[in-house]
Image (cartoon, rainbow, N blue to C red; front, side):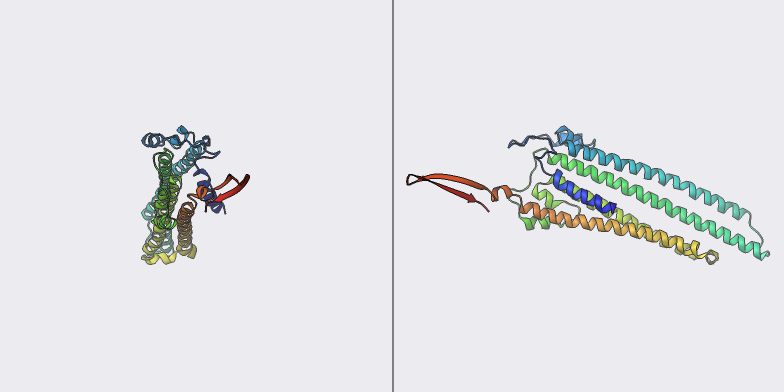
Length: 310
């Protein structure tokens, strides 16, 4: 539910913050268009939100600054968890090494069987610890990819608000939608001159597909680890929980995250096409729906008329 709320906020924010003249931009609403050096704004945006703050787009600036700060903090925490997970691997490796040094004679059937089971248990734990380490690494990669994607979004928006770039004069809705069907491009939004939304589409589609791919890899790794352990006949000495359940749970966890990320990428893919079509359709909304009054004297009287362009 929380993730659905986050996606809703992102889409809502994209449509609100994309408006150049609004209370959010804190730029006077007049017909003048102030231009800035796009390269300078892009350089300033190497610090998240720098280009937006320099042009008084304060809400956008703090949005990018806050987002990158939070995502960066998450990435650092994930990196710490990733490196800490090595300690668990070393602990079980030491345990397995100790057990192998304390090997018992096969002639003592009971002790030998217990020893074989314990060594197999430690080997299984090492495999689980390695999987968990790689899972933490995947999470770190995902957070880093999202940090980079939002950074690209930030740069594109900074260039967009420079006033030196714009879309086509009369965009065709079908063309805009077709261009937006090109994944990871934001082409439909660029066509409409919506650089903020283009950055959002590129960032979300790229980050979510990358994340889903990472968890797809982890699904395969969980299967591979279990298959390699199962080649040892002693693997059957382990309890069902250690032999099957722990690996099934890891597989399901990776599968759920994979599916979640891919669904998010589909949502923003559909959003990109829909948004491009709607924006192109409403591009000249103010011109098409222009109501004007006309007063002309006719035969010593006054005629009143209205013109509605649509």
